Length: 343
Image (cartoon, rainbow, N blue to C red; front, side, top):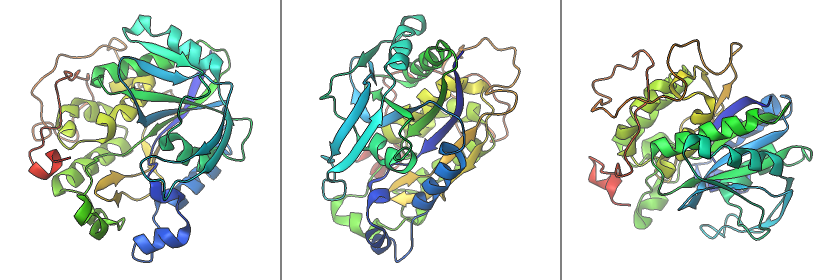
């Protein structure tokens, strides 16, 4: 039986692959914490923990009518970002894939009421939410396989949790497979407008787009660091008003695979909480607890509670972990702060 042996919510911002001199110029002469954090994470986990495959839950790869998982035997080439070609230009990548795992995950789709297609087209684009992290965590480890799964832009919270459940089943179906999950993406994700952006390139979280977004991120970081994933899931409708990257689909797929509200894994910080031109960024790593990803519970695995009007203001941070509430597809970024709704 395959198993998930570690998982992380990791930032992939373009800044991390810039030369050190340029990073410091953008950050008032200081190094951003995301870069040494990734180097330490590689030494602590990716070079030490026995694993076969890394599955990247890629917030930059957006599909529309289904989830797609890369099913290549190998992916290699040069990557130039269409978003920021000046900073991410002709970056070489070369790593083995895991088509067996990709197909195992796809076979689990029907059981969880979702749609997953494995694709091995050599012209399928790769995205920097995968490549940037591979450069730090995978390059130079040639035996480690890397697979990417995109978010689905028509999917809601429940859809991404279903993908996670199917992912867990696909991993479990492969005897002996040891997998790391990487939820590659940000917390709140609203950029400063172009004419204001260059005044907010410092990593200081004082530059997060709004005080409300910063506060929302910091609450979730606190919950994640103590393993209260249930609270994160319960308050997803509120977090969506602060426009998390990809509607937080990267995290939702990860936690769907780890047991959702029953997951008790506490996060270890591998960086400070930092700004990237308005967005909230941090590295958090979740080690598998000795008793497994989920604490003993009488709840039915995978069950969700009906949507309620619960808000962050009425749910104490110390609330007992409970069931998640699926968010309707119409739930959107109706931010209370007009600047958060302007992007």
